[in-house]
Image (cartoon, rainbow, N blue to C red; front, side):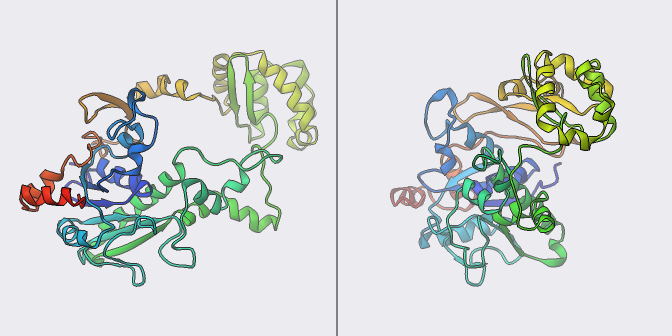
Length: 394
């Protein structure tokens, strides 16, 4: 038994809600992913398995929609509302991400109600800017939403442009907040009843880290910086690749010297003082760079960890996948694909006893469960299903 066994989730969202419902599926919920008849946008997102484009080949779609069932329905059309009403009759949770480009039939964005959702359902709407305010209908990509949150401004070298967070991490962070909100609402559902949860990606970004705490303290000066702290904190190029050091405590300087076997170049006792190291920042950077370049990362890692210095090899993606720590913890799991193959992907982000999270099925093929849901569960005929398909409703 997983925490959400017996819970039905109707997912009418796009990439903004994909990670949220993946988490819910992993926790045991029966998630029915509703795609437009032409397929979800993530089906067209590379990389593709074996380099071949196709509805079932996107590894991005395979990851975000693993563990879900899948049906097709054009939820923009008003004539989809009766079917949505039937689908939602069994749904404890509805996750949506409407936009002007893809509006959701039955959503009254003036009164923030969803006509076809059950009165006791948890309705979670995930959008770039939220359901209210003058920007509620603005379009935004992952890149734009992260920039608008203010977080991008502080990342990157001072002399260059800001640097965006890679992949869909800002959407993922938003989805994780949505999933936690849904779990909290489900916990109190018996006492509170149905709730509408309004998740804004802009606000998720804005409320994390210390970006605006710093802005408030420092006034209008909010500059970008390469890293945090002073040498030896930072990323250094060793003989075989980058190596990261985080020396934020007074004792870390001695640990750093132990790691390098107490080089003469850094023997001046005054360097114990972080203020001195700050004053000679550039020169010290040059000295440490030359020392680090003569060592291999594995040697430094062993000596640094033994000395009590927070340090690690800065992995490339290929090195990360092959990391012995992840292999020992069986982090990557093999999941079947729709075409009968297999793909390895990240598994649970945590361990528990008993197991609370699992990937139990491959991501669905386009419309894979249409017959199972519309005919088997809702009781419609195969002729009706064929007529809807001919009309491009499903």
